[in-house]
Length: 613
Image (tube, rainbow, N blue to C red):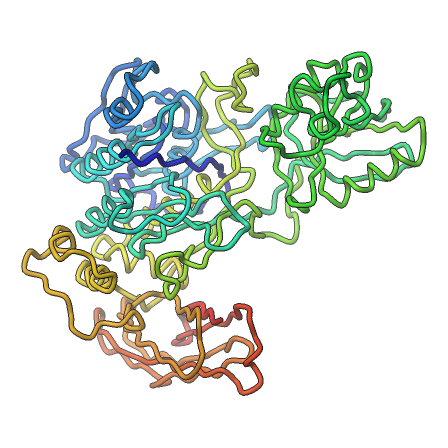
């Protein structure tokens, strides 16, 4: 049976600065984005100043839907037969064109060209650019309105491999635990990695619960989402002069300083609506006579998109909306392009609004115009929605691998899609601000492209290690296809399946343990006594001596042997061991504790996280 994968949506900006050498060499990097197509006319895919496409590129552009490629956008293909087989003939136009904005947004984040004058309704105005702005990019559309199906995903991955991509960016993933042997993303991307292609993928938007991360295969670079130091603020000023900081991307504003009657959704309900549904401002629950000309307070949730609540409020005649978090969403704020003046506030501030409403019969409020704030602290912070570890298949291998900006990211968009993703929203924009691990994933893809352009001889594992431990590390933790096959043996998979990824004569080692798997991070999910791991580091810098420094997790003794590693030439490898022991007084400790292991030669610092439970 076809396995249906749900896409993870998100956004980006915060681009990487590059030297002129990097900008020049990136033109030889081919970046493939496997999601939901591309809007080829976007300024983010202009090919100004780019020379001929290198002859090693084997991809092409499928022209259905008026899609045209150039020296920047060098490939655009679509895959739909899996969708058709599962649900019947696709009624959507078959082309690589992006009709919902997701594919253009993620691809431009990874490798978009310099695009002056980019903004979302004037917010975040400036020059947009991808992490690797001079890379060549290709789009592989594998998702349709009915979902993303396994056969199409695998076909897209296979095509990207055949076309010759250097970096594969996947802003999609499954939900729940999927065994490596049945996970098409894991299977397809191991084939890619075994051929030297770096693979970056989203961890998912199912946080903050534990064991929710998808794409946990160790050959995948798995990316979580964090905030940036930029906010789009819309202040709620209550009639008692209390000011509450919220967020919004509304393209309409209330007159400055003008107050409006304030009403709670429950108090505005129609005769046949339930209190709970009206509190959530669900369709058909608000009485226009009660709502007209007022600012309405709606509770987030109920299976309804945040922007859609604003549409319901506007249709009922509201002048503005305050969207308040319930307790489960805490203080997480998401910026949305509401169609009416609105502000999304935290659970704590929502309680303050309700307390004010209950204190007077003539409650009023105003909502300030949206302001762009820079230098916001603290930042970065983990996004509440970002999927968490531990790794559901191999808890000894820490996942996600890294976090990157995934909240309020500005990037290219489809000009046939509404910025709110609502069908009734007729607005259109060339750039949009989105949030999700879909947005954080291509940030890392862009950085991978930069490193690959400077170090074309490095393996995908070496590039991943460099970014995880520090961008210019001096030492890397390398892995080969043989190492990944050893891990598959550890899971007792069929030997024919394991051999399909490399050496046909491969045999499983007799004594492999996961403590020998050469990952850049170190995790112990169940430390009950003394335990030792082995790691191997490769010199990718100049000759030198590295000394170890350990920031031990609380209640844990950590011993590294040897404490010094000397390298005389590039490519030289050294092995070290790390032994962990729980302290005598830590037997009752139930939670994870964290530390760092750092190798330094005085110039480079190679930092590995230590995670112990």
